[in-house]
Amino acid sequence: MTDVPQRRARAKRSPAVATSSVPSAGSTERRARASRPGGRASPPEAGAAPRASLPGASSSPERPQGTAPSAAGDKRANGSGSVRLRRNTWTARLSLGEAGRRTFSLPMCRTEHDANARLEVLAELSRHLLAAGQIVLGLPLLEQAAAREGSALRDVRLAINHLCRGEARARASGETTFAEFAERVLSGKLAEQYPDHVKAIRTADKYEQRLGHVLDVLGPVPLVRFTLDHADHAMSRLPAHLEPGSRRNIAIVIHRLLSLAAYPARIIAHNPLPRGWIPKIENNKAKGYLYPDEDQRLMRSQMVPLCFRIYYGFLTREGMRADEAGTLEWSDVDLDRGAVVLDENKTDDPRAWALSPDVVRALRAYRELWPDNRRVFVGPKGDPLPGCHGAERFRDHLQSAGVDRPELFETTESRLNIRLHDTRATFITINQTEYR
Image 1 (cartoon, rainbow, N blue to C red):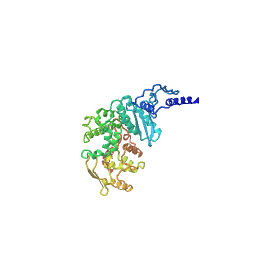
Image 2 (cartoon, rainbow, N blue to C red; image 1 turned 180 degrees about the horizontal axis):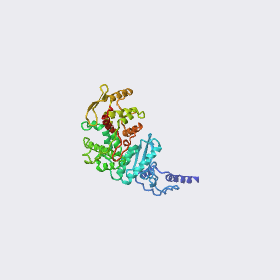
Image 3 (tube, one colour; image 1 turned 45 degrees about the vertical axis):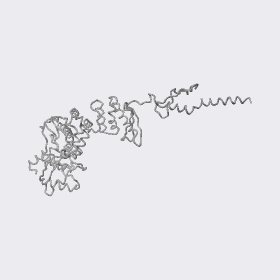
Image 4 (cartoon, rainbow, N blue to C red; image 1 turned 120 degrees about the vertical axis):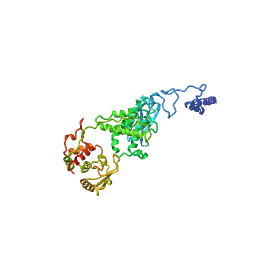
């Protein structure tokens, strides 16, 4: 009986013990609201003892699971990042200052090593943009840098350098760059759009070769912001070994593209390059030509492939321009009557003439060897002639045939080495003899 009061006393104390050890549902909800942003913490219950902290635990409120750490040491430095494989595509995520954390797709990367290498490139470019305060404007350029290779990536680097130096700014959506407009012209799309004012370029490879010297500078420049300074800067960076004639040809292409951009394309109000900008050259150097015995030596040489000998022989006997002969098709040649009809040519002056009898005989025999060719003159692999570096190949073939006259292969202040175009001078020389 003496134990009954003690048991009753313990029973009365048990609710208090349970309340202090197990938080009620209401108190749990209040603490959860306090942990949320904007939530209000409830005042401590009267008489409630402070909770003991675990050894090493922080006295700050516990962070809900899944939230980001708030310590300053956990943040990535601006310009740094990491790579990750998402749905079989590598991505790079970088910290970009006021632009926040951005994710860039890396479609050209196949391995983690490739992705990390491209991450280093993006980190380097982003640090330049951050230092120049142009990170927001440079975001589209970083996206292009993540997805481009080779010369396209080089153009993006150049555009970012211009942006960081204050020489350019990111182009607005819809602005056409010099490179984009050049592609429209060379592909024939502009000629299709304006057939009354623009003619398709028949030798686009030559224009591409000339533009290749300046596209790294002019390519990313929007046409509406193209200035005379851009053109002068591009010309000043041309290789020193280029001849004045080659420099002039490059300037002509630049000027022509800008003229087309003004009209009929109407992308710009006027051509920013003034009259007289295209450099002038003195055309008083002596040119080379072949003597009849040198022409015979070239035609008989087994060291020169037959397709080239037929091509050179046709040029020296008919006087046609090298490019025009390269585009000649069998449908333009009437071997029965021994005539050729050239409707499309450099001067846009359709003309026809009778071929020399020896040329007709050679072309008949030549066609029997390759009856399926559409063009008359093609290289050993079916590529059109003269192709790139045609003049250099012509000089190599002359030397292979034993033609070694020194003035044909040297360029001085008063003389040019022999070119394919000089076969027209050879045509005059041969016609003045009894060779025919």
